[in-house]
Length: 322
Image (cartoon, rainbow, N blue to C red; front, side, top):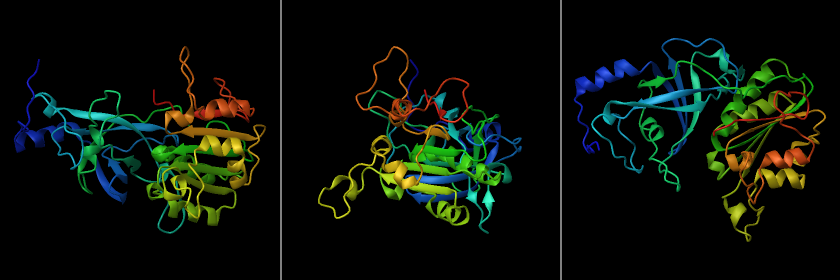
């Protein structure tokens, strides 16, 4: 068994050589929402060919980089210290530029990522988080690794110009939907585009200002936000108490359709799901469904379908993280 090395065994020359070997992109901007949530704009040394909004690419960083304080400790062997670890991230979008004009993914020379700092591993024996504790210690001008290819099947697909587009996300699962929304508006989509996100706390919303400008410019666009752990969600005595606003409950109760001012009719609507697997509600064959259903079975009960290859009205598309 390899011996754990507590102190980095690499000198400056070795670290610089590893950076030259692995890193192929530069952080050109960083927009912090708060200490555990940020938007990173990263410019690759070699530009990517145009790609589909909703796709993803890997980001990587060397184990030799320092971790931010307050994150779970790792145990590394001497070989581990010289490795660069990669994780896949959906590509977000600046949405709108400083002049108020649309700025879809293929109109800029960088890639934007919407990232939450994972401080601790989960409770099911997962290894300590690797990438984000180091990424959040990086600044503008720092180098990083970006994957060779942008890939993924979670894209807009075939929609008609007057169809309703309903995008449901949790947390940073909003990222691909921002890219899709900007693209749809850029191509002149006339139907309703309803971009919905649910977060634990409203301080975890990083794109509110951009979405507000979109709604001012495009009457067919609606951005809806909900939370589950703010005072009005958990304190029955709060003057604006609404309870925990899970997307599943909002859909079943009809509140989501009312807030969207749209009937969400499967005969003319397409649904996109991204974020917490519990919200999506995919049940693998041979496994027991959860006690609290996710959106997939609820949408199917309402007349939507996720049949493979079907892209007409009533279709459900969802990002798979498993």
